[in-house]
Image (cartoon, rainbow, N blue to C red; front, side, top):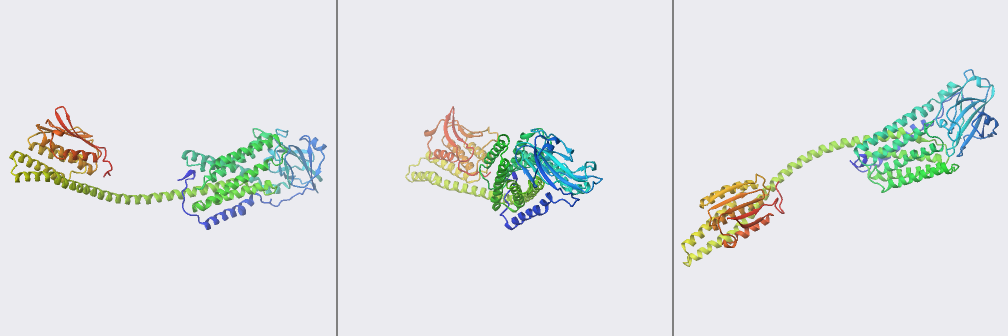
Length: 626
């Protein structure tokens, strides 16, 4: 698993499959889904308006309407971005007054408004006084019934008194929907569902996905991907929630300002999610996006609180959104060559998100009537993203289980092979140790035993051999021969088994030579785990120490002391060091101990002569057999 998206690279990109996924996702959305958001009204008994006029007002009252000077305008009519009051007056004619009255639905985008028919108010709620207007005008109100008592035969006037705070998007007026109540209700049925139940479901879905993603991220800490997905979903849902609140806790310019930090976090989260999605990443992008976010907020604060008449206040924010969305799309495209088929559907959904953001931004910046797909696409995109993400990770987890099972089989096979190889290596090491020891013994026989026998032979030929000297020489040769023969046998693979063999042989030799023998083991079985070569070297040092004591000691006792880190061969004789004649035995014991990382010393301690080998924890430069 890698980074916050639990992903692994699953192979090279299959371009036909990717192109198919991108085209299919775009086709399904733009052809099958998006048209439903802005579908034309169903046919209804429309009553056409005959004129439309607009006038600025001093106050949101009918008296101000009667005193206003109206000017004819064309629809749609927009006034951005000064705050204030306006009235828009529609006229329509009736040949007769229907007994059931009429149905009416305003199509306005303002902070708030009240509705008047022939001088009588029939709809309106919330606060109309600036600067604390409520936002009921931004929330769809459905269909109003115009009672027959308020209608006239002939000319009728439908007036909307509008209020909008300074720094807002101003006033936007479209043709109202006017006709029989039943036909208008049926014509607007889908739009009512879209602007009420669908928006509420979108908010719930967005917050649910955001909370789940953030909780999973908090528990797993698997990179940033799930974190930014949670922020994106929650920000998108929060922006829709703020847009659908008719009476927020704060009003006026402050509420208008607070909407941008939430909305602008959507592209910031999106670009960081894209940067943590694939293996290719831009360094410092998170910092750069947050700096851009702060600059965008600063510009928006200036436009709302300092220069609300600036008509390009929100347009700059939308340009920033499009720039971030373009970076997001660039990251997705940049990663496409190095992703596998399992991410193609996610890439397709990401590119659709980019297309929706650009579509909405272009409509706002260039004043095109394209609609705001971002207001309605949240459940579609989030559900698609989560579905693709979960499907990929389900396949990943299934693949991981299969992969682990395959690895387990291979691991078992490899362990069996390693066990065979290990046994073979141990046998080779033992054989090599024995071969090395045989070569050393041959050298010792040539240098030690051979030279000793040759010296005795030469003395005998010259007639200079004294019986006592000859007896000592022969005894020494016999001891040396016995030592060489013993060292040819296997001493075992562990130090404890070698000591058991040494105990048996040393006791026989010492008692046969007329000495008392003692064995003191204080190691408690805690001996270092040495490889066979090191065990053989320790065995040889102990053999030679016993031989040296039997040859040169003038005492009556040989004692073996075994400790966890040292072994001693002690005798109660008085001769030590240079006072003990002999060949190269002492040098050999020092060399053997040094070769395995230990040390050897021949010292006098009290009444005893002590030959001590200090054991290593492991043999230097050696490979343990396990």
